[in-house]
Length: 143
Image (cartoon, rainbow, N blue to C red; front, top):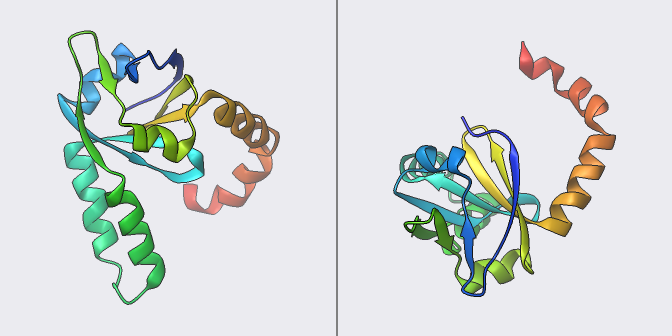
């Protein structure tokens, strides 16, 4: 399970350190793609394939299903860690979520997210302010 948050910056070659605690869980090759709320996501290859299979079960006649599948797959790229535990992010992914340099790498149970630092800080402040009311609305799903 991926948990915690870590702050790192892109280097001049668009490489980003993946925290050591996340490296085993993502495997030697994994998928990075544009994700929800203005971040990128890292899925282990098998978990990505499971998610795509679930999306493909939604009827293709639903425009939202087509849109979600296109967004997730068209931005997806296969990545691997270098000997120093870094990945090289392609420019199209950096541009998709507007990463300047500073990033926050967040563990989210079954996947890892990469956030531009400013976007994460803003999101986290807003989410923290509504944490208790959100928890109340989700109580029924926790039973």
